[in-house]
Length: 317
Image (tube, rainbow, N blue to C red; front, side, top):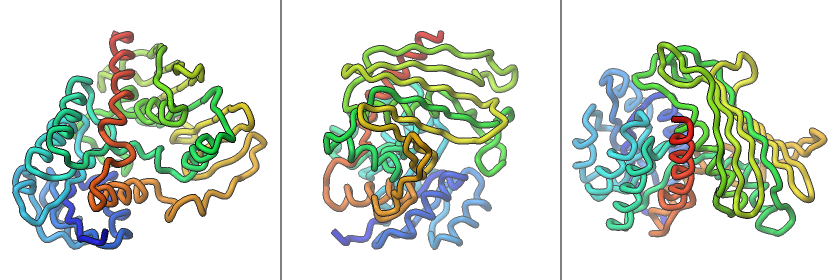
């Protein structure tokens, strides 16, 4: 259980750095390679986190004997193809959300995982945030059942910039990226598949070519419903805010803070070994590799989310 796991990280941007900060808190993890589009930037990150190898070629890193697993924080359109390449090279893989932006590519990733038997998980961080873990434990203990989730995902992003305010080489997407968090969490927390899904979207941005506002309704087999509002136009509090309305309580999750329906704060500091959802996600990835088991948020588990997104995209088209 203590074997050193050697990691290559592809995409040392805003989210890649979050993974590197999480990995340094996990015993027996060594970052051996950084793969980045801009070599000088990748070299700077590698120096800071102790990686000895830098490249702009993923295949070069995948061929290295000192790489056991790869974390992909690359543009959405590359996720499925790179995940498959990693597994074909014999490497475990954790790919950032979304797994894909075409459901057939997601299915191909799942098939490759089945064929290789390697650990393959997707970064659905909400499964790991202590606030959502707290609610999940209440559900599993039979103390709380979701009747409705009301979710707002809001950003102010009218230009193509990342979380650090730097230009992006790709365009983010409300449906395939940001809605994926909530669609997966809703099915995960209810333990039930979505059987009804509706979506409407606002005008397409003239430069970015995407809808900047979207509204989604979901219903599961269990009868629970979810309303999700998403916007890149919101000039106000940023992030995703969840209201769980259940048969015995109401919970409001804001980042890693949790409140009851009366806005009284709930202490979630003892739910897990860290309050950092990305670190907890990375801990699960490393543990699954060491224990030779399927991780929470495996590509197989999250595929149902992307099947719903595919259905919604067809509706919007």
